[in-house]
Amino acid sequence: MKNTLFLAIFCIVFVLAAPGVYAQESEERVIDQVVAQVNEGVITLSRVKREMKSIVELEVQQGKKREEAQKMVDEKQGELIANMINEELLVQRAKELNLDSEIDAAINQRFLEIMKENNLRSLEALYEQMRGQNIDPQEIRELWRKQIVRERVIQREVQAKEYWKPGPTELKAYFEQHKAKFTKPETVSISELFLGFAGRDEAAVMEKAKQLVAQLRGGGNWDLLVKENTDPGVVTQGAGKAEKLKVAELVDTIKLPLTNVKIGGVTEPIEVKDLGVIILRVDAREAASSDSVYDESAVRSAMLQENFPAAQKKFFSTLREEAYIKINDTFRPLVAPILFAEERKEKAVSEK
Image (cartoon, rainbow, N blue to C red):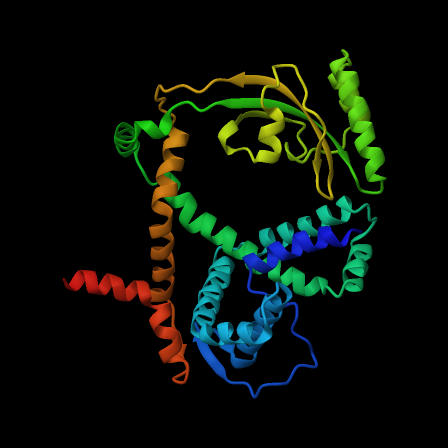
């Protein structure tokens, strides 16, 4: 198993979720007290200290001096506790929505995908590899749970509701006022042949990809060569084909090799670091147009993107208003101004 793969996966997790992997049993124990009560849940001082220690360790790993990292975390203690309170509210809402089984399934699927990508035969084998790199599978599971809870609750309670909120009249009015947003973009439809590095010599994989490109450009049958050689695709997410991708939204790693490739043509081999080599065939192209086209889905998506930040703030504000939140007097001056900032803004506006 490549360490770089684990680093790529778990660094993303640390960015998206409050890290807790580095807390050790041997760390100095804190005389516990309740920092905040959130409905029936509590946030304890020991939990806050563990979160702070974890963030410091992560910052140090990323090159920051320990003293600087500790100072930064100490200064943001109030923000950290406010975030933990919001996170606790999301966990409680997920339970109300009966999302626990869905969240567990998503976590298990992530582990299975990593297991398969690294040619391991069982989850226990994966866990052993992780422990060998000082990564606790249970702690990773909890980090992913925090991330997925947030994604699923926000998707259900904010994004979906905002997406379907506008009626036909509002949609048409928005389209008429923002026609420039809805011009037809340049698109490309592609098929993918992917050769994975897992369990193979990387130089040999690249040489094989070059041979396949030569065969294809010499008249080789795409479908046959794909059937005989491909692993589940990464660009097409395993589907093998992708229809009408917006060229402007493609990453340069994919967009640049596709430039000037005509319909029916194939790219040079594209190396994806630590994963494998991609060959793409252009199945179709559609040129951009300056004419505005009404597409209900596109209009809804544009309105969602515009309205989402305010809708999300309102959602969290409502969660807090409907909850019983009691902050320890010692921490209230640090936490309350941050936690209830939106509510105070709304009050100030209403009083004008």
